[in-house]
Length: 251
Image: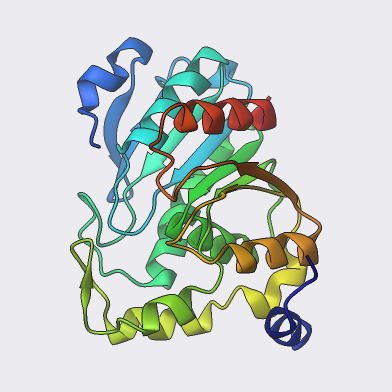
């Protein structure tokens, strides 16, 4: 498939898991850094010996302890890889106003804190979290290791402006949020993105796979398709396939 004309035009212009039942085996700790609610799969004592860190960013209306992230963090711990999952502003226990600028600031605070360990830092961004991850990367001059996006929302402004002033998944789509999405457009700056790995679902009807394929082609990113899967990867064996791919990438 070629890059969509719309994408090229803009680009060239510039199920719940309870916390302790899931994480106690890997000594995951709930804590708050810079007023950001977090989960991590390592202790402070273990951190210096870890191979790297993965910052996990959840999707719209979700939170830091949802199944995909919970399962991934558990498996990463077995590989001696640290993982930190945050609640985005307006989600879970994070009471800040949801704007993309606030999302970027929170990720920046976590990433800056992890830098003290002098280890590579990678990302995992799911759906809306994939968009937020890309927005962060486009506003950072730092170097990162692997960036894995799971069925990312590529054109967030287009998707969410259609439901401005409505509530989706318990989150109000405010005019301020929509304006911040317009400021942090991905497509017009996509040429600055690199080293992306993207997992997408064959039968996804929540995000536009054509936009994902166009983004991957334009940025020369590596694609992984999970056949038969929907956006949530909750069918038989789908989450296991996703995690297997992720572990291969992070290792």
